[in-house]
Length: 208
Image 1 (cartoon, one colour):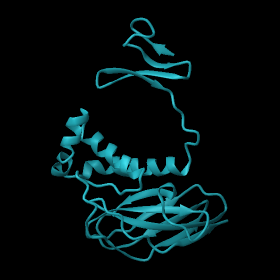
Image 2 (image 1 turned 180 degrees about the horizontal axis):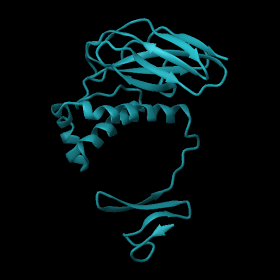
Image 3 (image 1 turned 120 degrees about the vertical axis):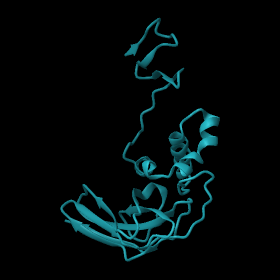
Image 4 (image 1 turned 90 degrees about the horizontal axis):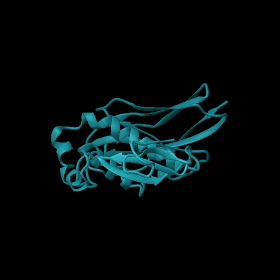
């Protein structure tokens, strides 16, 4: 239903029309767009994007004021907040399988964390994947990849979760719910400056 303060095609219209168009406002600017529904909201690409959005949005509060202010140029150019500039560019890059960065410009450098031995332990309809951190260095996050077959490359569409590195605490991903079967996992670290580290050796576990 379209809610209006004047005729339906006015600039004050908001809502959807016929399941085809959406009327709304953004920063005080009225707009209309096509109503788009993802063909498969649980596809690898969709899950990979949501994993990145979750990681970035949850960690924004932990960034320093100085780091947040580096997004000023993009924010001013697009008339958006620092937060939206940070989310927007990082997610845009992630679609090209480029790591996120805490600051702009994203330098793609930094010292990788030293990782311990990756493990995967099956539970009831779940698998707990644990990545020990020996030294954090410039590490920011751990990308967890999953595949139904072994000998795979960790790619954007296989990303299931991105966990934050907190000093030398283990980074843990509980993958659930799962159907019976064997699942294969690997990880890659990400630095605060936007560098993707080397992919780990695969591990696997079987849910019965």
